[in-house]
Image 1 (cartoon, one colour):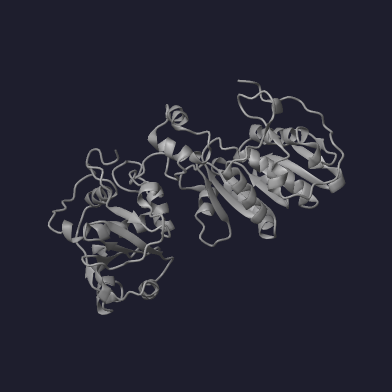
Image 2 (image 1 turned 60 degrees about the vertical axis):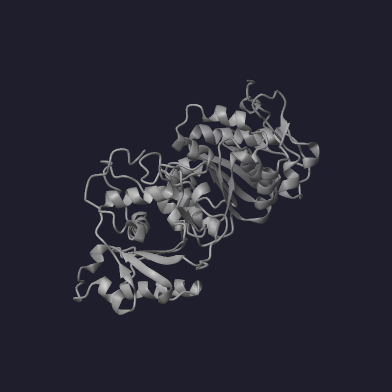
Length: 461
């Protein structure tokens, strides 16, 4: 494999031409990159996903990309920072990388783009150092910095390209330092391969406020990735690591309780609306929670397939507030209490509260049809696992794509440090408990005894 040309010294000054005014997509077509196996610089490939990302950067100020590895998205980010430095006005255009070596490489890549650009890209004079490229005529600078909060604090970048966000140390502190600039109109482009259900990248990807545009770049989008490439790429990788690095999975590195959960299998492609066909039944599952009450809505078809079509996760809600929110979700689907076969709850909810009446009694007095039964956590977890994928390869559980918090819970629900029980992390466990209560109370399981026992051998396999 040839040596990377952008690792070699390049001149510190170059062209002196007018600034470009073309779109980013058109600007991209004037640039050259370096690709392994090639001696000469190569044009950016004119592939559909590359054009799509370029258009999204033209049209959105805040873009997040979840990507498979080695999809040229980092090259695209470097090109975007260069484009913004030429067109985004005077000021700082910032690149953040996970370490000092990566930060220097980002500047080398941008320098390479400048050195090998077509002449009609109309690039102005510039000066380059190991950490900075300066366009004096434009009063614009590209800075490339490693992940250190003190390095970015006080800067007000007009553009921020954050590479491999999920692997960046000090990510929360860095985000707090640059967020004011983003909020005041700065352009933000964050990209990463998933690194588990934690960190700023994960939180922003799963933010439901609509502030960020989120897109995914899967290895299958690359027309050069065929079955032979996949076989070679899989070599030496565990299935969990493959899913994180190539299948865009946010599951933890190890210890996921429901490791059978696969978004491509269990998530529906379209939003689901309960159709109440003959033989179908509607259920809810409720985990009262101390601070984060959780509710799930599901419909069971006559063949036993269960579809979870709505979710609710509260924040310090009292029981009355929870009931109001449940009623609003019911109304959204045109449902009332008479449509439900029952609502499954935590048996502990039958215990009296300080006011002398239990949550179960409050709901029953309000007209809810409730069901609950004692069950060990381990046996309940095993039942849910069988719904996700049983020993015969059957899938009995599907999820509406709008249930983003439930998906997050599946990906973040971990075994505790002893590996005997799920971790009560206060974030993922409430929705998981609501699902478990719902499933173990289904009629088909009513006759099955549920002895309290340790997690059975092989549950995590």
